[in-house]
Length: 323
Length: 224
Image 1 (cartoon, each protein chain N blue to C red):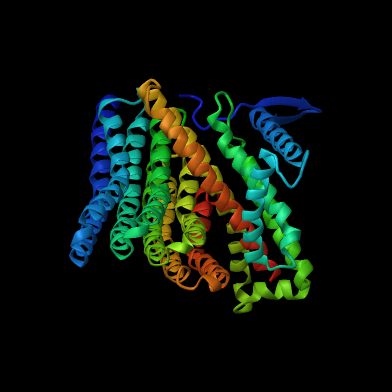
Image 2 (image 1 turned 60 degrees about the vertical axis):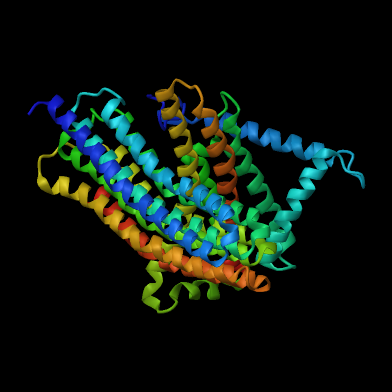
C-alpha cells in the first residue's frame, strides 16, 4: 500500500469516526431537553410558546458540538492541507477520534441546562430572561472541552508532521487524539450537570442571578481541569518528537500515555461536575451561606480531581521518563 | 498555516549562551501595562463627587471585586489582598481582549505569561499561609488525613498551578488557532469577526474572571 492510498483511507476513517462519535452526545442532550420541555408544557400549557423558544435556543447550543465534528469531517473529506507523508494519514485518524469523542460529553452536557431552562421558564415566566441568560452562559462554557478537541484536531491536521519518524510517531499522533478526545467526555458531561442546577436555581430565586452565575463559572472552570490535562498530554505527544525506533514497546509507551490520560480524566470530570451541581442547588436557596458552600465545593472538587492528576503523572512518566 | 501556535522570537548570543526572547509577548505585555497605567492616571485625575467617565468605570469594577474579596477573605483581610486581585483581573482581562485589535496579539497566548502568573499566585498564597498559620501548622496540613498522604498533597498543590495556567493558555491559544484555521478555510469573509467576538471578548472575560477567582480562593484557603 503506498502513501497516497493510506492517506485517502485514513481521511475516510477519520471523517467517519468524527461525525459518528460526535453525533452521540448532541442527540442525547437534545432529546433530554425536548423531553423536559414536553413535561414543562404539561404543567402550564399556556406557556408553551416561551418553552418552545427556550428549548430551541438550548438545543441549538447543544448542537454546536456535533457541528464541530461535522466541520472536521468535511475538512477531512473535501479540503484541508495536502501533505504526503505517512504520518499525515495517522494524524487524520487521530483528528477524527479526537473531535468525535470530545463532542460526546459537551453535546450531552449542554442539553441538561437547556432542559432545566424549560422547567425554569414554567416556574417563573416573568423572569425567563434571566433564566435564559444563565442557560446561554452555562451552555457556552460547557462547550469548552469540545472546543479544546477542535483545537487539537486542527493542530493534528494543519501542522506538518513529516519530520517525525513514522515509528513510533504513529502512536504519538493517535495517542494525542485519544488523550484529548476521551479526556473531554467527563468534563463536558460534568459541566452540564453543574450548569443545569445553576439554571434551575436562578429560576427559583431570580434575585440571586449574579452570585449564582459567578459560582457557576468558577465551578465550570475547575471541573474542566481534567479536560485541560488531556489537552496538555495531547500537546506533549504532538511536540515531543520521539527518537526513531521500531520496537513495539516505544510505540506502546506513547499510545498508552494518551489512553491513560484519556480514561483517567473521565471520572474526575463527572465527579467534579456532580460536586458543583449539588453546591449550585443550594447557593440560590441559601444566599447567606454562599461563601461556605463555595469553599467546600472547591475543596471537594480538588479532591475529586486528584485522580486525574495521578493519570497525568503516569502519562508524563510514560512520555518522558521511560525513553 | 505555519504560524499555528507559534510566537515570534529573537535570539541573542551572550558569552556563548543562547538567550531566546519572545519579543511579541514582551511588546504586547508592555502595551497592556501602559494602557492600564494610562487608565488609572485618567481615573485618578480630577477625582471628585461628580466623577469623570474613567472614575465611574474604575469605581464600578473596583466595587464588584471588593465585594468578592470580602466574601472570600472577611472584612479585615479584604483590603490587603484586594489590590492584588483587582490588578490581576485587569491585567489578564486586557491581555485576553487585546487580540481583537488588528495586528495586536494576546500576551496570554504565551505559556510563559500564564505560567508565571500561576506561580505568582501560588507563591503569594503559600507565603500568606505560612505568615498566617505559622510554619508548623502549615506543614502539618500536608500530612492530613494520614502522614503518608503528604506526597500526594504536594502533587495536588502543584497540579493547581498547572491547571490554572493551562486553562488560561489553552482557551486563549485555542481561540487564536480556531480563528486562523477558519479564516484560512473561508478567505476571511463573514465568520472570523463573529468568532473574534466570541473567543476574544466572551471567553477572554470569563477566563480572566475564573483565573482571578481561583487565585483568590487559593489565597483564602491558605489564610483562613
